[in-house]
Length: 302
Image 1 (cartoon, rainbow, N blue to C red):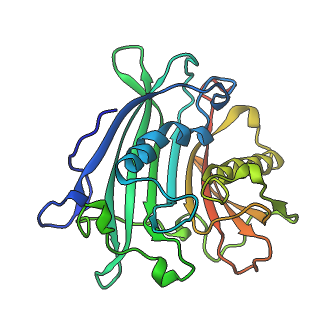
Image 2 (image 1 turned 120 degrees about the vertical axis):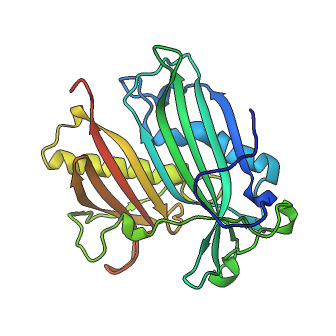
């Protein structure tokens, strides 16, 4: 793995560059896992994070330390926003893919200019050799983590300065943004589809953070949207999930019930938004997780 510092396109405040403005870069290879491939040998959308996680999480935690999964104390950086894309490009199962990525810190600002959140942004690409010497991108991931504390109080939970132990200074100068829930879930519009029955999260869907793993929401929404599309007359033999945007507002836990809803958002490309609501939440509740899925058609039409 190679790393280095540099600049990242985006809005940065003028001033002296600090250690918090460093960009961590990664170049690595990842073996292809057979269950991650479709029948066309293309990388599945829900598998992308498996190939970018070492570049995004591994590099950061190796330098800054890992969360305490036993006591859950101090500052940690859960995912808030994920954007994934895949092509329908066949892969060679025995040949590793190449991952190129970078991660950097930023802050979001309130209307009065004060720091609202500290975030870590990552942008990563999964590539394979092309017909010529050029590489072909088969997947991409944009990951946004928010700094927070393990605390039930929302005020104490918020982190607005970097921990001194990180040795990065007080604040990054780069200014970022967190996508609003309303960019995925249409405000004030009744869902086109809504589940009447409740499903339940189980132990096998959790991870070491002691809540449901982020990709489980994507997998379960893919299943729901596939059923929705089938009932609407779409031929699932010709379609695949090509992109997803996910906002994690509130974690879910094993044994909790949930319901899914969905909205048609566009036709070119075919876009469906979905939301997970915790069992018992009222009709006016905000969803725990919101997902926008982009559906594409196989180039061959088969």
